[in-house]
Length: 496
Image 1 (cartoon, rainbow, N blue to C red):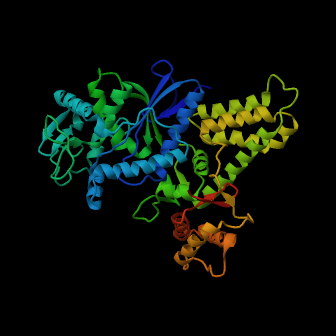
Image 2: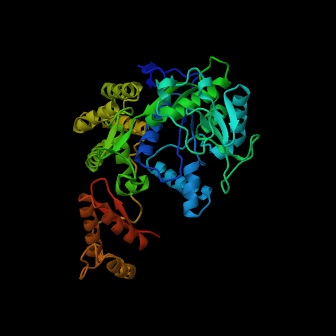
């Protein structure tokens, strides 16, 4: 079976063929780092990371572009509230996002373009739309005239008349039709701006992706990805902006891929609902590889519900997978190794066929755990080495590393060694800072740390994450780092 992908544009699963030789060109809508990344961002980016890994493992070359919307209304407003430059806010949150992506084993992008770096190309595209009668200039900026594009709504399956119901022009907007959208926003006093033929300002949200994909990938490129919430209006607007500037029959992209939404304890993540948690916090509380495996257990197009119970289950599954691999790879190779390994090859075919079937990561994982359940059989039959090779290759495609190690100088809370004497002053401060969290009187040495770690573990079980984070932060402030192991134990290390 060759690769087949669900195409939002055709509403069916179609065979995938690269447009140009064996080089697959992918554009994924990236972060707007006006705030911390959340778990929904992680799910989308992990999906396309696995797609990219599978394509490379299948012999394709991949050019992968993921943009950064580093200027928008929210970032300007939030930076003003904090009294810092918008660029400082963006850099701060994007650095946090990148740390989270590295923890989740997301590969680095080939191109990571920022909107503010592509201002000349954005201006050139807007000028082309004006010249062709698809845009107009009014007092507050340049707008795209939606009704000039006959195919508007084709991607999302909507028609213009339906879209007009409930559409409105926001206060201060001078656009001529409620469906029209901004290509260039004229700057208000105190806002960052760039010069353009129509006046100083900044680009609208949608135009940046059209400009950057055009410059970096050309048309048509192979795959445009993002979350399901981007189908309308963002991706619909990208098509409307891009295709009028082409030759009249060339699409901007061959395949539109969209990932399903993520729920948190059965509800959409929202700060107003109180269930929003920064991704960086979750990665401190849970093994990043377990989060990755949890996402892979559900098809990328399906809605998914994240709960503490589900991540605990994924953590246990990860432990079983990595333990099986460790056992298999440590087994000495048989003296007589057959030239063919039919069982291994059968599982490999199942794994590849699952991913070829619209990136069915759930079925791919199932093929791995079928192998895990037969670990003793592989060892007894002398097939441990080739099966271990298969697990390693497959885990690499899924972005799971069997070689994760805790930081140096860490040790389990069950250790009997005495705590170094240089920690005495740190313990004294911790005793004062955490007096309301745990009864620490008369406890010293290893028992002191063990009690804090056990108290933190109890708080996590009770879903009292504020208390658990208070303990972790207090220890971190004193240069003591905690590492939660896959087997449920916690180690500590002195941070130099």
